[in-house]
Image (cartoon, rainbow, N blue to C red):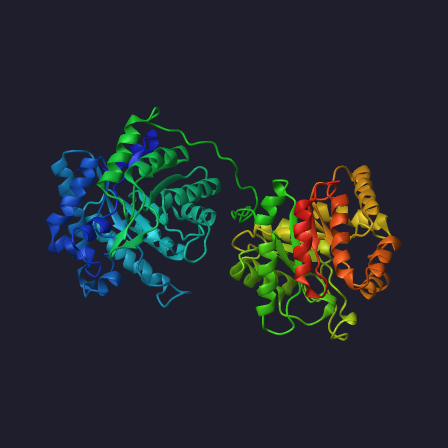
Length: 624
């Protein structure tokens, strides 16, 4: 009988170890209904099982998994077979061993152990000790029947797989492969990231860790790289599905071809995998092509490619989310157009979403959602952000004032925003409640904007809260800060901007600018004092609407200065003032475009049509 030491020798040698493919897919293709207990076929149709094992052995598999994926007391109870756990698992090992003996090679038998099919506390009614007992029962049967190693696969709960590994270690020192499955967002069903999965599995004592099932080879390549970055010294296993399944003419079909899997067999090993194989949808043909690719590779023992990054942050490490679309556009040097929208005063969002659709069609890149502008009661902005992103398909920026929030609410609101997919945030002080609907409302705050930027970028985005406690997973916020380019106290504005950039700000949104020379002078002053401005500016654009609008902005809104020549243009325009306001906005942007990387349009009186006209004008104008 092959010894489990052979598996350790293969690992130590750096040899690429090829496992088999799907069992359930082949059984279904041979007429077995999904309603049948596949594990009971070890007793009722043993020849069918050994035939499948032999097919994988002939394809070149070095590891044959037993037909025992669901052979635990909970899954078997669905078919009234919970009293036959030991018998079914023993038969599974015996059939795999028979196939190997008949093939006369040194392949190994891996006891396949899937999830229990029940939820563990605190997410279900099954206690951890009950899960431990169920796994112990199945593992004991597999080991007593002569399994060479154990593979825990398609697991989705870190609490559960830890109980499984603990049970295995209590019984024997057989090699353990522990793999979880991931959803389309590269998280487990309970939301754990590949990075956290890797860390927990290594700490649990699994000899080989990794991923199986999931979407397909491309997804598991991403997962593998993230896991390896978190645990660079670990050994890895990757066994993907043959892509996402589709139902065709009543049958479940998987799109990934055998040739495609052959290509990925080598790529997985180059990325650090020691064990490769297939899961749902894969067949002996997939394994045979993987075998041929491995055997004909220029370097049969492939060294892992260098890590592109290692986690140095504690404890969760840097975020694994891709950059936001806004971040990507700014990083690539694109001129970005953002438009501000105010949340509704009631709960109806029909008009707001209609405006957002108009702006998206006009060419806006992102929608900014204000938070209680002018300290007036409105719908929570992160709900609006989520609706816009979901229903309009355009990314949003959440305005996040510090005023009126203590540390508990600040952090809770940030986590809520991230959970609903809002990752661009614009940190501001916020309008004082004295000017709004509720002048006696609480106006306190625990953090100034630079402090909140620091909390987000140096805390949440590395996986810790304000007190340094682990939040489980790093956030991936892209953080904007406010700037007045035409401040009456430019020295103070320069110091504040430098402090915010040091705290980690990623981009700048400015107040409306009507004096481009003064704005350019401010940017030059920053360059002379602190060096080149390291983050992009998205300049504020508020199209003037009427003579009264001009008078209000110039006289009553701090930080806004409108020069006499612009005031005269609006006054002389009469009932055409709104159209002239659009022309002025486009002209100003043409002057500023060499100094800034985007326009932040604030439509007056929710005139989104005027914003759309400005967008069209901007797209046609070259920098002056």
